Length: 162
Image (cartoon, rainbow, N blue to C red):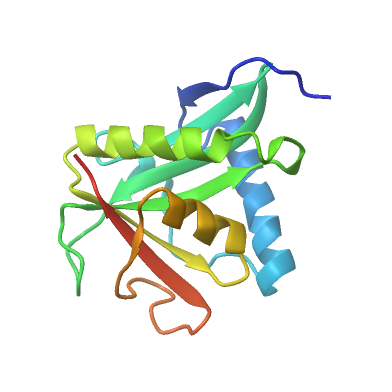
């Protein structure tokens, strides 16, 4: 049983063993809900400062949540000042305790400090809890972008930072 200590959020390398384990767990959720992993191209170096960041949240020294952002190259509908949110995840045993919101707030803060003017993301219709989190945190629908831009089950959100 995981205790009640406060969440300890740390910057880690995308290749850190705890990050790797949590990313594998979120990929398994995608397999269960969509039939396959997220195929969006991701390079670990994209999550290294100053152009990206990856966070892991620990509860009683156990890794329980993760997420990162990477600055986007300019593209259709996305200026180079956008950062993209990736790999948000909270282990099932501690969901509903506000850890996703805490991590999201820290990701927004650090992306803004790095010069991002907006945080953007893609999620799917089979993740209603994620959609609700982002909407309740002030994210608004935006035009599709990236790997899944033409997929009917994808939803895109953005939020101005700063």
